[in-house]
Amino acid sequence: MREITFAEAIREAMSEEMRKDPTVFIMGEDVGIYGGAFGVTRGMLAEFGPERVKDTPISESAIVGSATGAAMTGMRPIAELMYVDFATIGMDQLVNQAAKIRYMFGGKAKIPMVLRAPCGAGRGNAAQHSQSLEAFFVHVPGLKVVMPSTPYDAKGLLKSSIRDDNPVVFLEHKMLYNFKGPVPEEEYTIPLGVADIKKEGKDVTVIATAMMVHKALNAAKELEKEGISVEVVDPRTLKPLDVETLVKSVKKTKHAIVVHEAVKTNGFGAEIVAVLVENAFDYLDAPILRVTAPDTPVPYSRPLEDEFIPQEKEIISAIKEIR
Image (tube, rainbow, N blue to C red; front, side):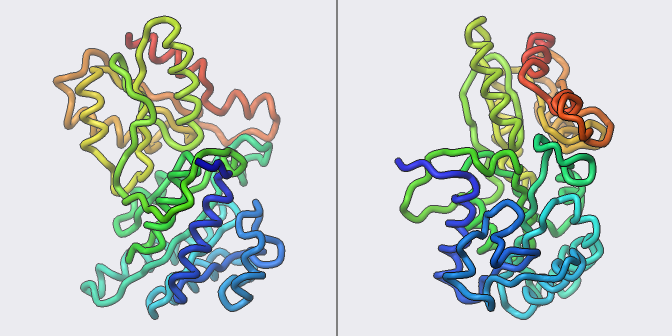
């Protein structure tokens, strides 16, 4: 099977859906000639033209608000933000409008929009361009939240997100854009709300998201040398969450670690811990531990940023603590 980058997989998903459905279009800052802040939409303007690859003003409230309005009228906008940090400027439009309209109109209005946003640290972009804010969006009824970790998942999940009749926040870890992986050329989709077991194991379950999936896999490989078998589970969709797969894995291994790059307090990992306690408490042989970033803004200094981001050594240490 061919291998392409995470960014190429996202571009393919958007291009394929735009060729099939004339109501799908892209909008955002510099998505046209420049090809987006991380080059994801590069070349799409030449194929689809400025009517369907729309450069917008530097206003996240305008981007999210316009996408919401377009979705209400029957279009399927894909709105790109340069950084997820800037979603805070469009939160009224997203949280108080897009997320609530279908409910408040009794289902007579739909909001089939996707809000794509790069997230995460690792590029030295400092505190205002490096956050992981997925817990913000998961907390809001009416929003679906997707966070893929591989090119295969990114393409399949994005196609499903574009076809969904609800607003979907699609989070792309910026350190994954150049990550390569196998992606079939034939048509496929991945349904929202279905987790994936990236590696099977029998001694401990590690539930990880985005870039942390790969660090968990690296940690699992190291621990195999010591005879510890680690199962790595990627939720892929944070909302709706595939509770059944997570619980089934923990019931099997009887141990759980949750890993995410967001800060610890009220991070999405806390929700996973709560779900596991509610559904698998009697099967646990040890407390569930969280491996997360500390409760501090993301440092600009590269050594401090490396210290901020959870690393394999911390995952290994947490696993050994409960084993």
